[in-house]
Image (cartoon, rainbow, N blue to C red; front, top):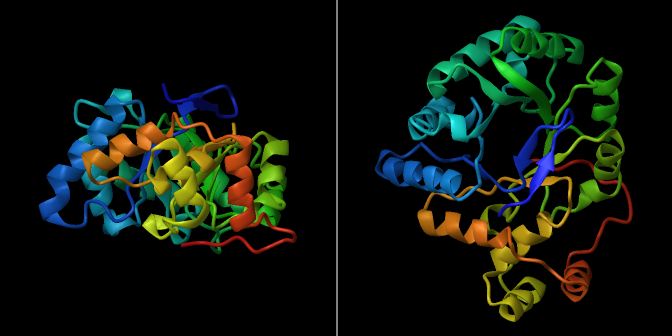
Length: 277
């Protein structure tokens, strides 16, 4: 069983979801990617994250096809471009995403990153969508601590998550952002939890993997999910990768493992600007 994370308001979602960045962009891979998404849902990784940006809408279209017959089993997340995040623009962008996704509602709708539109306008758009039953929850992505403080001051107390870049090699948010979100009761959604396969396979991750009889990337994924308030959304376009990710959700790292990772991937000793990919 995949553990769950509780959103503000009590909604429980799986701590392991499925990212879709770069999926749906190559026709020869489409059937395989659809199979992978459906398998993940069947195995409990039912949170599916996408965005209007991905593939200029092609990814949402692929996800929509994958969710035919699966929509009620999935917790569906999409994101709005910052330049579309005006009060009216949010509503119009959501309608386009819903059409591509072949659904009448999103479970969670995120501001992809901060742009020029005031938070008050974006929040008003989200609230209009909620009132119309088009989205259930809203949140943000790639917002640092000062941005989050401004969002909350602008009336963003209903923010359900902050989706950020976080993995053993990208620990900057641990210094202030993650503690701030914990204090506010806002879960973190970690994208690129294995750095898109670029984390080292040797070193601490490799030795821990050998100890547990798993892959180094599974160790990295388990490390991200060690936190009770963390949702990880690795991309897996093949069935075998989906199964490996789900297996990682059951991997428990001990104190020795965590100390070895800390020794190689040092926790931050000072504030670092939030990184993005």
